[in-house]
Image (tube, rainbow, N blue to C red; front, side):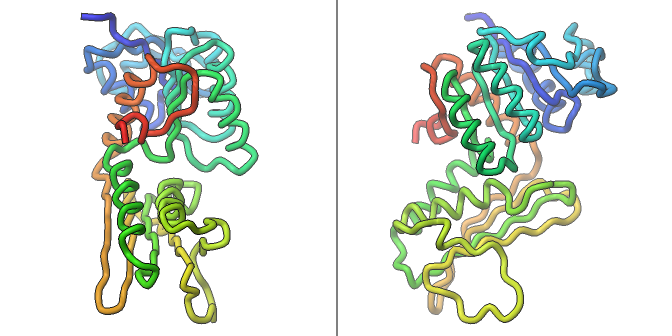
Length: 269
């Protein structure tokens, strides 16, 4: 059996970070080599394993990726846009692989991420779930098969603490519709509606974001026709689907040449 793949978990004390540490420690193909939190965070200096409620791993949480990052590592990042960009710069400089699940980047941040991340081996996706990746494929297929009289709308709901809206996943689903129909997404997208907006344009792709309670993330794409309607839905029952997808991506990307990859690439779609 080959040596376990060493991973570095950024945001190790967060909900996703703790879950990634817990799942990685239970996977014989992986080894938690390092963990990182923001400078001044109370978890800095603590054992990453103990943060998950499990036994000690012998891995102390660092306050700087640069202090622990090496070429053989795969860096897992589900933090915040500014922090992620800093981590991407460090990983690219060191030649480490990356799996980035952070959302909420503005246009300038996305451009920088694409440029810097492509210098090393990077999987970047707004949603690491295998199910959501397949949903994107199904949505594209439906948009191609259905004529434009089937009007497309995207609805998503997340927990009340989510900062960005619409979600990156909802936007990706809307873009899948636009791409399949040969539409310019920026001209077709309508992010929610308010007031006397008039009749819906035939080419609109509506995107609506709901925020309530502790919803992990539900996404539905509606194709509304005359006399019938198709709805394609993915419901995340826990964050584990995101974490497991990220770990699958880590195992896949470590052996790839430098470049920017998606979960479609990971699944061979």
